[in-house]
Image (cartoon, rainbow, N blue to C red):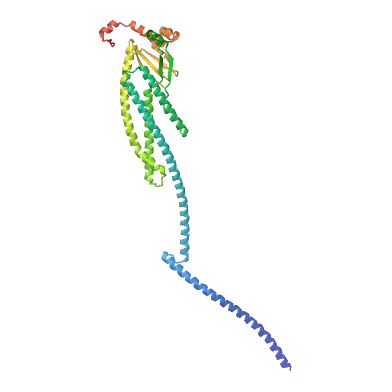
Length: 402
């Protein structure tokens, strides 16, 4: 019984041990089943991944045979990303340059429109100058039959009209924001009543009022200088416009604004018309200048024969002067110089010859304030000191009577 009891005890211990082993084995079985299920899922995913890998390898080989490893693919991807960044930067730079070019084209269009307006204004001025020259030529042609007083009056009216037009154009330029430039030289006219003219014409039965008109500058020379300055400025702007047109043609920009094509066509065609008009104006100017030189020469000779004084104008930086040389002067250096003041009056300048005429200067200029009387007294003094009989025998007289 003891042996049997001992054996039973051992068997009970073995049973409990076996039960513990059985539980462990059951746990192992469960974990093994789960691992098998996981392996099946992983095997399925592996198959799908292998298929995708094969497809990617096939696609990359079709694109580039060099892409045969993940490292090469990564390098290629990095290069593509770097190139993408460079392209984005270039795109931003091109957009900036495009905006700058568009802004420059707009500014050039504005400048071209302003230049077109200036050309139109100058063309109108050239037409006005042409009409003025034509009027001067007509007045010279009809100088023998028309009263000089009416000619001067009509010329003054024409100069005043031209001056008003120049002022209107100058105000337009100021309103456009451009610098104020003087487009015409002012003509100052000073009028004063002539008492001697009234007394001289009282013998005809009626008192006729006269005016003595003093021009500060010669109107024809002033108009000619203004015309030459305008012509040079037009030629300069014409060259600039041609350069701009050439640049636009080289760019080949077809996205111009609607008004720019018309402007370019006008700039291409307009210089030819302006050149033809300027050539015609030059020819008319040459004719007018020839007629003016002839008339002025005859006028100067008539003044020299009637008054005995040869009158020359001398310009300086300070003022304008009149130089008078008498036909009866003893020396060629005997000359009188009169300065033309801003108010139009004349002032005798001192020189060696004027200092020798102290008595005449004090009597007629300082006391009487009369330049015509002073010149007349000087003529009588020089005439009395000459021997006219000997001179008339040696040379023919320049005076003729009908």
